[in-house]
Length: 420
Ligand code: ZN
Image (cartoon, rainbow, N blue to C red; front, side):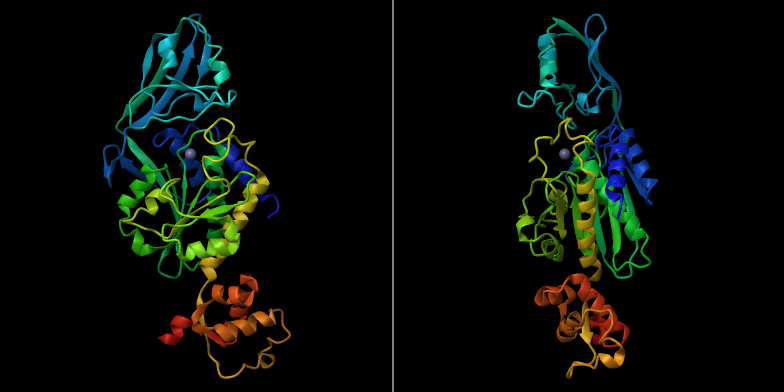
């Protein structure tokens, strides 16, 4: 894993300049970047399409957006920072009084050096975001405002990477990819998800089919769900990935069910202290865990959205995201992946007395002997390998290795196969 944090951070930095939104070329450029790293199938959902209780909005194209003084000096310019323009601003090209301009400005008096992030997807208007101290320097009587955008029928784009597995059922990993220049929310999670997909794609076999979804927040998840009404019958486990690059410890927000296997897996990896209860707020778990779908999906994150001062501001930039945190997020995720892929049920084929391990070359071998004794004892078709790890106190990886060694000698068969 040497250098993995730097690799992930470089991906965050590469995506940072793109002006993403819930539709448009910045979003497509982001998906093209992802598609250059993992196999990605794109879906375009036309504007106006009814999706669940929503409608896909017009596509937004930004060409230029600035505020200039009468003598042509640009005091706010989206070319300098993507956050300067309120997303989905409509076109305007005229001279306004300072009072009128003020009604279209957004700044943070408590964080006067930072540019806020604002959107107006469903209300037609125009606006600019700027550092409060720069706003206070706007003292001219009039300003020239120019927003050159198109809001017209087009489509919303999302991308999926599907890695087939051997068993029926899918694991859904979702990361929103609609925010413009914001690094922790959510480029960090995109970079980690892409790396995980690369790791899983390189494995010779996978238990489940792994589906990685890169979609705009809210409306993109709703588009995917509208096209996948059968998701509850397919999705066995899932994770919404957000804010995986800040220096807080990783945490996990439970699924709506609270007792899904993914909730238990996350608890096993992170410990009880890092588990947050479900709430119908936050990110796309709001859609995946809506009652009609009720998918077994939690939210893996470091800091929860909205709880760190850099959130939705220009301070959420690549410097805020730490290579070590990205690497730790990937490592945490891989440990949860191990549970998803290997928490299976087995049956001891020689349950009467202890089988003789020495005769099978297992007694003095590399495999943890205590782990083997626990696996043999509890593999009665009712205890999964995680049950055995937790009851024995042995690491899950040692229990899995013991099960595989025992299976190789015929002492274990899968619980399903022995029942058949
Ligand atoms: Zn956000």
